[in-house]
Amino acid sequence: MSRIVLVTGASGGLGPFIVRAFQARGDTVVAVGRDLHKLRKVAGGGHEVTADVSTESGADHAVTQAEQFGPLAAVVCAAGGWQGGDSLDAWNAMMTQNALSAFLVARSAFKVMKARGEGRIVLVGSVAALDGAGDAMAYAASKAAVVSVVKSLAAAGHSHGVTANAVVPSTIDTPGNRAAMPQANPAAWVRPEEVASAIVYLASEEASGVTGSLLTLPGH
Image (cartoon, rainbow, N blue to C red; front, side, top):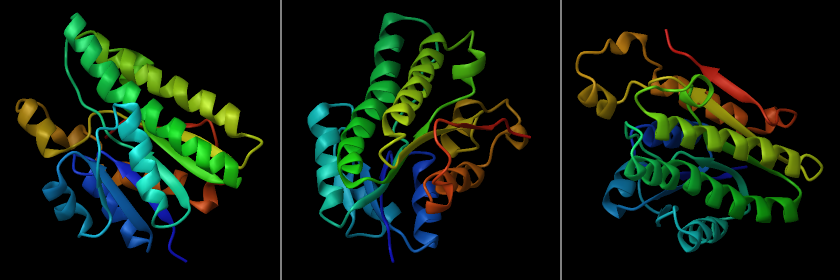
């Protein structure tokens, strides 16, 4: 039976790999983003939702629309971004794009999953949350907030059949990262397919006993 999986940031650098990985398992993926044209390219048409998930109304809308296709089995919060530095602008941008979006979507999904007595929530963190980043303090802090949200969701969902986990990758080998860091060696980075596979596992029925975990992908 096809499961309903909601993926935010579906048209970003990592999102398409996540969408394809779930579709390969036969799951129905509801792809969420801001650009409908890009979403249709990724998801294939028919299961796209346009929403700004960094707003409460947008996050709730994404979850409500996903539920129109059937009971929401899993949600993957992959919406986010990167900005270096420690300016106030960087702090506000990173907290909004990374922490707030994950918090709002996960909170909304948790409500319907708790009522149903089952569900999987997977957030995308970063090794910067654990190790820090001298050149991207605001980004690291926003991803640390994502890790904290995972821990709290896991505690809240423990007796309600809802799990919450995070993948914690180092730099992911996406076209955007290659363009931003042309002098770096992408061979040492994490392949997006690896991250997607880890997410699929944490969102699967087989991972029902895994919650509050941080699956670290340090690269090669």
